[in-house]
Amino acid sequence: MKLWKGRFSKAATSSANEFNASIGFDQRMYNEDIAGSIAHAKMLGKQGIITMEESELIVKTLEEILEDIKAGKVEFTIEGEDIHMNIETILTERIGQTGKKLHTARSRNDQVAVDFKLYIKKEIHEICDILQEMLDAFETLAKQHVDTVMPGYTHMQRAQPVTFAYHLLCYYQMISRDKERFEDCLKRVDRLPLGCGALAGTTYDTDREFLAKELGFASVLPNAMDAIADRDFAIEFLNCCATAMMHLSRFCEELCLWSSVEFSFVEIDDAFSTGSSIMPQKKNPDMAELIRGKSGRVYGDLMALLTICKGTPMAYNKDFQEDKEPVFDAADTLKASASIYTEMILTMKVKTDKMEHAAKYGYMNATDAADYLVSKGIPFRDCHEIIGKIVLYCINKGIAIEELSMDEFKSFSDKFEEDIYEKIDVRACIKAKKSAGSTSFESVKAQLAAIEASKK
Ligand code: ARG
Image (cartoon, protein in one colour):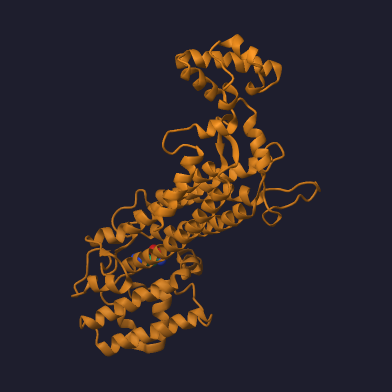
């Protein structure tokens, strides 16, 4: 039986009922719905809107219903439409008239908003924990690879040598901003919409500050219409998810490349790889590819909610029922992707010899060779040209810059001396970086120390 049936002379068709119902997906908010109702019932009792006995009976019964749901003893119905009315119906079945008083001074509009915010708050905490584990993994790996050299790329071309630790700490920074973004988003989610009624406030002497305290919200939204109609907190949450997925996707792309025979920088553990049904030699980086692919799905979730909200007039519209699935999907996808990702990077084999070999070829010390000539008093632009000519000469000869004889060096510039060889050694190139935040061994150690210090 519909809780709102009074005004109707005809029941909805079963297809309309099914189309309208959200219980199929919003039942995952049962915990939040019951928490919201318990706080509301306590507030009603405290304010004398219902009696204390009624309030206590409602609270006690809701707690029992929660236990029954957890034990799998409760069956939700399409007829009940959504999680809110399903639970209210069960409550009324159990305690009769008193159960019908719970919805005093409340609407499903503020109820759904508070449920959704409680749910997103819980997700933010879980996601931040998972991202912290990932940050710890990057830190652990970086500590192991302070001395591992590898090529740094721009335009996917070998550019300058860097350390693997430096590359990992680049991702550390991206993921720590993602975590920060979620923590910041939490500030907007943490404002209470409950107690706003359908859109205009209620005629009862309610206590919204009490509700905020009971439910652990930092503050109370100041405008009831906004409290009902706002979904930007969910859009912001989806944006945080999409950006984090984009970062995971970028590293996964690198893992796919690096685990190819062409690169061979890493080998993903067998436990995170799959084989081919036809080619026996294949070992595919499926997890990395899937995470990369799933980033598209989370972008879709963000686009979906932006589009759902666009053009919805104030205040509540049923369109908003479509807000939950994208949020559930994005949170599930990010949590699963991030967890797998951390396990995958902690177990992959890093082929330091291959990285080092690649770092020595590709003329990545050309900039350092130019800087050498600058130190001998030649203007940088001229040095750039001299070294450019040397690189072309070496390419034609099929050798590295450091394989030139002293005579060959001198034929390009008489400023070259014996010390050129040590100056353009791959580790010397890395060591020579002086600017703050560089790839130099010292700087990377300082970056690690700063991470360590930030935890205290
Ligand atoms: N299932 C609805 C939703 O998810 C709950 C709010 C319904 N409110 C209403 N006035 N029909 O948005």
